[in-house]
Length: 449
Image (tube, rainbow, N blue to C red; front, top):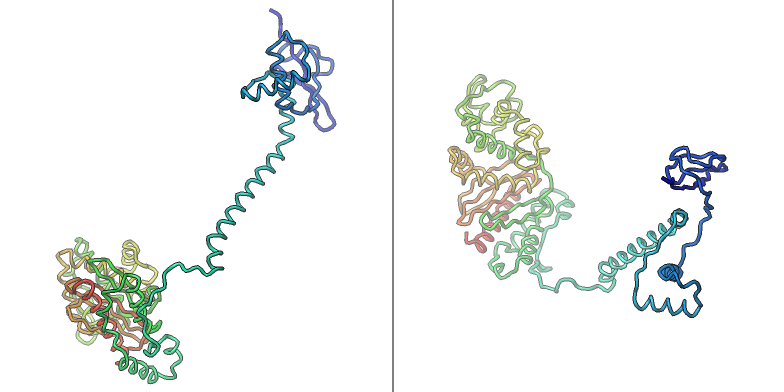
């Protein structure tokens, strides 16, 4: 059998030159005529001068000539006619290449790769430029020519003659007496609770009107309103943080009642009143019971809600633990970073409304202990708000902290959370009363109760 001939491939590595067998890749010496790897005769050493890629016309001409071996020569006119004929017929012609031509074409391709990179960069730059032009056209141009996105509407804002107290006015008041005069003049000159005309407003106008009503109280008050049947929500300054004072007893009581309903706790179990519990603050327990008295959890929950007893919170906290309560708050989706020691914690209106929604669902679910919890909240007799319908509520008061979270059992139930940094004097109580009357009347107009 005749052996297949091969040839040597020339490689330039810096100033060194060496050869390899094209067939098996074995490195060759200068005097080798037969490849030591595949034992094939070496025919010749090819010249590796990169050649320019032939044009499509030349390839077409070469291919046609190969297809017609009898034609040895071709004139210029015939060549032109042949090229035109090939273009008209849109003929796709494959052509054969020798190993030398393939290597030369690879070298040509590698040499031209930076050009392709530049083309990619130019393409990407063109796309980026087009996106920039579109963004400028959509966003910047309407502002330049002052295009109106929404139609002009006469919103039901207070007129210039109405006295609306702003936060800046409250902050620049020389004394509490001046602040009370501002409030008194507002109550005498405005009638914000007359909102029957709101039923003719659309949703957007409605929110603007409620916001204009709340603007008179400045940034010292936060509100979260929710109608439970429609899930309509309105909030004012919802993420402003306040010292929670005893309002923290409400979600803590919800945690214990929920835990008891799940069979993980017994409200009949007792906790001993210890001397260290006195350090938690004031409450009726320190005046009604001696140190060493055993009190049931039911009694502690009752005094914690109805009488805002901080000592009851401390005793229940010692029994249930802060970590387990914090984990529960995080699990239901509230802000666990507000917890701290429970007796010293923080809250905002958004979380207050969140707790009110969960507690309402618990009270309506008909669990065995739901009635006990609802009774404690309904018998809370320190409300700052003024509601016509029964309200299951919890209030808290401390210097610079005056709060109330209420679930109102109107024909269409709703919750109203009012948080403030006010001092709790008669004027501040009147503010809470006006806000609660406004939202109860609003709820009655739009939801029938």
